[in-house]
Every structure is written in structure tokens, then in C-alpha cells.
Amino acid sequence: MAYQSWVFRSNQSSYDLKLEPVPDLPESQITPDSVLIRVRAVALNYRDIIGWKNLAGRPVDGRVPASDGAGEIVACGANVRDWKVGDRVAGCFFQSWQSEPFEMRHHKNDLGGSINGMLQEFISLPESGIVRIPSHLDFEQAATLPCAALTAWVSLVCRGKLKSGQTVLCLGTGGVSIFALQIARAMGCEVIITSSDNDKLEHAKQLGASHAINYRQLPQWSNDVLRHTDQRGVDHVVEVGGPGTLEQSMKSVAAGGHIALIGVLTGFGAPATSLFPLVARNVRLNGIYVGPRDQFLEMNAFIERVKLTPVIDRVFEMSDAPDAFEYLASGKHFGKVVIRT
Ligand SMILES: NC(=O)c1ccc[n+]([C@@H]2O[C@H](COP(=O)([O-])OP(=O)(O)OC[C@H]3O[C@@H](n4cnc5c(N)ncnc54)[C@H](OP(=O)(O)O)[C@@H]3O)[C@@H](O)[C@H]2O)c1
Image (cartoon, rainbow, N blue to C red; front, side):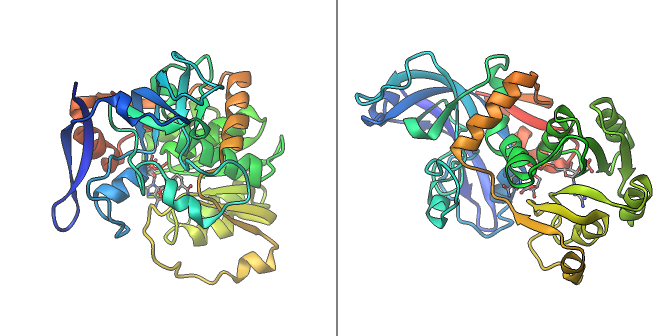
């Protein structure tokens, strides 16, 4: 029986998405230490747009996209003891990264990057490359956790040492930022958020943001952040913008505060600003690349305890995956975009 898989195919300058039959039986993919998963839902990240549009020059020809997916185990290899058929699981972004510290070899094991990802009906993963999903979440909700949620969790909680009562600044209303908002609120923190869209700012306020700033209308938005924090600045910035937003982020952070350096929404270039203010103000600048499996497990326990529900903007069918990519690239979404496989 053939099954279906979306695949990046080179078109010279970037990649097309092609739905292709996979000829071999799914069962033939199982090794003694792996499980076979019927993927039920996949969530897209900006990273998938970077691959699709070839924004980082990373070759992905023939690669199955998407790091983030959830489904149920349909078969287990002979040596697998911790999992059984029917278990509801999600894949880990870095299949080999179990715990801190990070090592560069893990870049060879990122789903949807160096190895085939989740945008297919079946995937075989090592038993050490999956986690149980929170019991209150369905597959579509759980599919959003491996990259966006874990990045927000690691940024704020594991590396940032977030404490109740602190103030967090989130940039924009995409996947990572809305998870950061939800996690910070669940931990008793205040959240300031920016967006290009006033309706999205209203939505963020309904989720608990106490102050919302339109970064298009106020390009020097750090002034507004400072005004709102009695000139002190915020304790944490979830920096998903990159070179085009770093200057404003540096002006927004409190002395002794923390910037989680995560994203490249404004590109991969150098920031056109001095980094010395970080030195002068004893700010921690922390490079984040998703997170290890043990922190994914900790996050899922937290999500289950506080009953955090991921914010999904739209769900697309498997056959419409290219429309989901287009939609994410348009930036019209709030939170996550999901594909039902
Ligand atoms: N290092 C890591 O581990 C890691 C993990 C996940 C993501 N990332 C990176 O983090 C970034 C966000 O990823 P994502 O998947 O959450 O993206 P996403 O869901 O596609 O979010 C896109 C949103 O970002 C906002 N945005 C765009 N340009 C902006 C700007 N100049 N200033 C402020 N906000 C801006 C827009 O929000 P509004 O519509 O509200 O304006 C846009 O809708 C990407 O660069 C991604 O590559 C890194």
C-alpha cells in the first residue's frame, strides 16, 4: 500500500511542494528501536517558509517538510519497551538532543531540515525522539508543541529563569510569541506585545496581554515599552525579529534583564546598531535553538497542569498543504497554522 507525503522539489531558485506516493510499506521503515506513527496533524513554523522560499540557502530538495507533528503509534520495533500501539505522541525537533548542553551534531537530526519531517501520513522515529502529548490536547493542538511552544518555554523558563511578577515583551503574534504570552501569563507574569495589526492586538489582550503596541504605527516602540514600565524596561524580550528589531528590543530591556535571541523575521543580516548597550546594562543575550527532549517533557507536564490550550488560527486539509504554507507566509495568522494529515 502506498501512502502520501509532501516533498520539497527544487525549482532552481526555491522549492515547490509536491504530493508524492511513498512506495514502500510503512512497516518496512521500523527498526528495532523505533516506532511507526500515523501522523494525524502537522503544524507549520516560519522555518518551513525559510526552507520553501530558500531564504537561508539550505538545500532541502527531496526533503519532507515540517518539524512539528503529532499522531498515534501503530507499530513498535522489537526492542521498544516504553511505548505501545495507540500511544499519542509528538516528535522532537532535534531527534538526538536529549538534554543540555547542545552539541552541533544535533543539527544533522532536525525533522524537516536535515532529515525528513512530519508532513506525511506515516513516520518512523526512534523511541528516544518522541514524547507523550498532554492528555487534554487533541492531535491538532499537540502538533504545535515541538518547535514553537518549546522555543518559548526554553527561552523564558529554562534559560530565562522566568519568575512570577516579571514582565515579558513578545514581538508580533506568530506561533512562538503567542506561546510565550500564554506561558508567561500562566506563570503570573505581565506581558507586553507588539503587532502590525490592531485586531490582533485586541486578541492578544483577550489572552491576557496588559499592553499592546502597533509596531507599524510606532516604529520606535521601545519608548512605549519604557513608558509602560515606568522607564525601567522589561525583564525578558522574546526576540523573534532579528536584525531589524534588535535595537528596539535592546532599548526595551531592563538593566540586568534577558533577551532570548530566537528569530530572523527581518532577515539574517547584521544588526545596524551597537551591541554595547547590552554590556553597559548587564543584559543577558541568550541564543536559543528550540530545546532538548527533557525540557519538552517538563513543558508538557506544565501545559497539562495549567491546562494551556494552543491557539490555532486555521486548520488545512492534507491535500491543501501548499495553501497552508501560503497562508503562513502571508502573516495573516494569529498563533498557529495546522494541517490535518
Ligand atoms: N531559534 C529557534 O529555536 C526558533 C524556533 C522557532 C522560531 N524561530 C524563529 O522565530 C521567528 C518566529 O517564528 P514563528 O514560527 O513564530 O513565526 P510566525 O508564526 O510565522 O510569525 C510571524 C509573525 O511575526 C510577526 N512579525 C513579522 N515581522 C515582524 C517585525 N518586524 N516585528 C515584529 N513582529 C513581526 C508578525 O506578527 P503580526 O502579524 O502580529 O505583526 C507575523 O505574523 C522566525 O524567525 C523563526 O525562524 C526560531
